[in-house]
Length: 102
Image 1 (tube, rainbow, N blue to C red):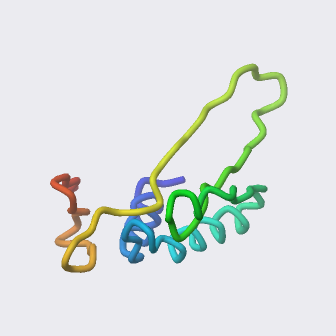
Image 2: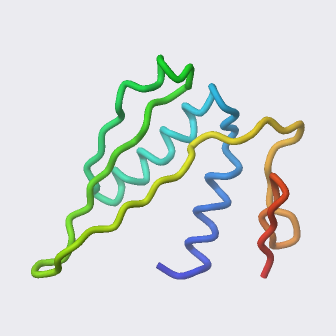
Image 3: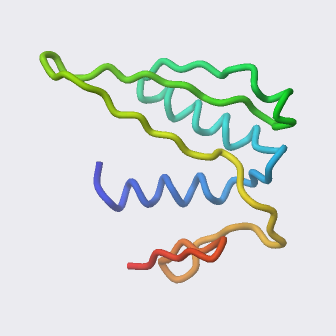
């Protein structure tokens, strides 16, 4: 995947409102991405106990034939509360005190 495509996907996910407790829309977007890629996944039942809008999405991607080992990737679906929508500003992704620009 090209850097441009990866950044575009990241930006699109960041722009989906996902305040803690109301992250259903971003969970659905990630689920759609996984489905489009043909990756099997499940959502656990942690939402109620965590008072969240969605449970954890758990996907398993098989490794290449003959290659030992595995890689795990974990990420939050929710975002910290903020007053304005997260958006791209002059080719940069900004928020929560972090910035990445080109």
